[in-house]
Length: 378
Image (cartoon, rainbow, N blue to C red; front, side, top):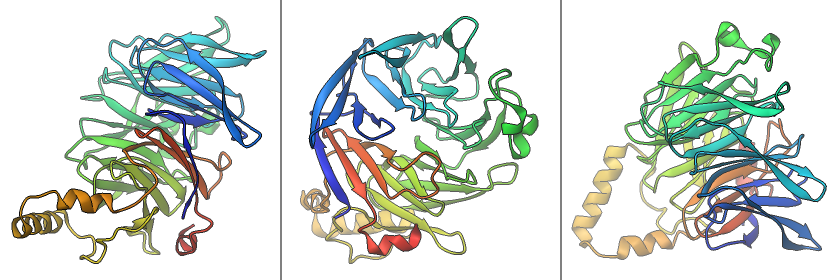
């Protein structure tokens, strides 16, 4: 099986992040604290508890080079934690939000981080040397609802966001004095801070879990209607396609190679999507145990799948058999998977190991090297 390690750290985990050497993991046990566990003699022991937030911590990211942790919470605040001596020291970041902070991510160069919020706003935070603190610039009046996820382009300038208004957007985050002109690429070379490069109105439901491919040429995000969207040639004339599936919706995605994506969500079992030589994306299989009901027709349109479900229910009657069958899918997680984190080196074009965490309180490490049928996609 692809799962090589399963750790039950808490009854429920909101989000998690790893240190650069993978010897420590930080996670939120669905409260206002962040617990840091350290691997010692093949055992995970709690080393630190970060206590500064007043409400649930909704986002954690651990920078690889600078060894800083950034957290975001429903209390509308964000903290940058620096390891000094033997303790983690917090620095408050003034976000100027009137709603909860929902997600956070360091930029590739780790000189900025982005915070998505329920205030229809994205905060781009950077360190101001003169005043020795973290300040934020806001991207306002672009989203019509809460910002559910953010993802940095490899060029450290472009930022993709998803929102519960169903749209995926790409913005320029160029900040004078922080970014350099040569770090920009493509059509964004003359863009200013907060300028909207692209708006994708492909989903008719909430949108989650946006990610860029390693090269930055492809964008993927998911809709709450059990659809995953892939966008190539992000720019004035993007090429978009979607893959609808009959299972429960996804919450987050991860590119493990230029043509392979792992999706996780309410189905409690990671799903593998891949593109063929012509660039057409399709569902490959579940990463955990295969479903017992996989004999049915191949994935098709949403209408045909919905009709099949309706026909099956009317034929066999409304009972709990469907629920039982869904539980026979197998898999390590027993509840919704909310977070997926790569375990490869930063900037690597191929990832064979990653971790997931969910509402069941488990952190699971997955290794694809043992999955022979998936190696052709890597």
